[in-house]
Image (tube, rainbow, N blue to C red; front, side, top):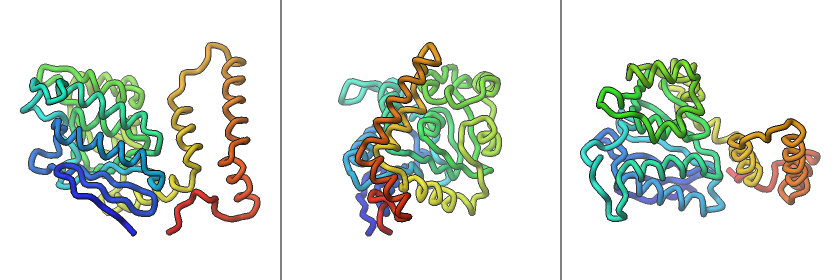
Length: 262
């Protein structure tokens, strides 16, 4: 059975191994205010601690996914002594390093810091009509913090064009340049996200975390050193309890023990 908790700016619902974190601040277009970001950090931490949670979806209420930083508080220091940009760095790092798969569901526009959040997710699905822009230069600032997650995703020429011009682009272009995984028609958005989640929860929890680390690793200087390190990783997973269970389940043509029961 699904369970949920009402939060002022981030709503949490969990069902079938998937926790959906919904940005719920439509009055300011789901801007990344300090309160919203702190609630998002708390919700992520709770999802990480819960072994029943196998994947996380970041979604939104209202027509806008996320309008970026809350410009009303850009120079304000929070109770913890951190500026909003520093809290945003914590949020993007938390999503990027999250040991469970994270899927961004984008049903509307995203700007500036919202694009950093999308890029931090492992998978991202948007509507073709969703719009995006790195609008920082038009405010006389630069997209510094979000570059840590955005630049590894984008084709370099596209990054230069869109960072420097601040021009708006649509979901189809976002998929072409690597900002999102897929752009679909609006009526296919939830179906596509659900299909990804259904696939993700079939993976072993330890293997998924290890695969995320693999995707972000820095290769060794030589191919032989790289192969040696990767061979050791592979052997460790095959010898693990999870690996043995996965192989046994495959041979016995059954679902592995970690797959959530519908």
